[in-house]
Length: 208
Image 1 (spheres, helix red, strand yellow):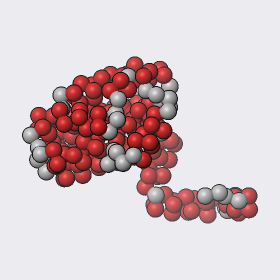
Image 2 (cartoon, rainbow, N blue to C red; image 1 turned 180 degrees about the horizontal axis):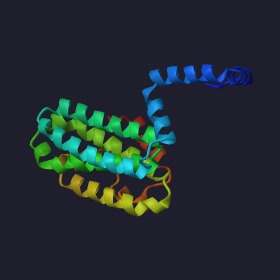
Image 3 (spheres, rainbow, N blue to C red; image 1 turned 135 degrees about the vertical axis):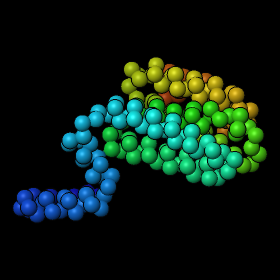
Image 4 (cartoon, rainbow, N blue to C red; image 1 turned 120 degrees about the vertical axis):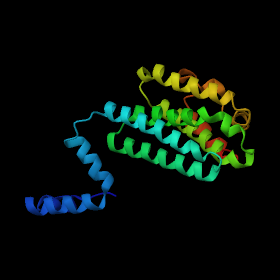
């Protein structure tokens, strides 16, 4: 939404007390904005510290979720909630590195249960696998926007992802069928137009 000069002037004309009331009213209605302002203004934790805490939470939450792998639909629902928590962390802290590292960590922790996943009927885990492949594609597009100083650390996550994918026969085949090139699991080999490649793959009916 664009704000006109007149609207901005009207807001500026509010008294200090009126502005305070308006701010607190808005914050009560927007919890995410409230958390973001708290982080930016007075939170003693840095972005790195919050990311480290979130890493521990992701690991713990996937361990708890693993009890429900046999119920693929419910398991995927829990994974989506963990992903939503990561998204909230990114919105609060604008942690671009964490947006990639935390999502790849989530994928790698899920795939630590390859043995359990492999015992499921393929039809039951198909949506989970497509979800994982979409997340990898999204991470590849984000990596291209990161400073190259981060690439060495990100490569470790990608290598772990690739190794685990190759341990899962059906997931590996599904990656190939959806045009996920395993050469891209190294930052410098990700195509510059990876976002366009992803769009074209989706337009052909894949990744769903």
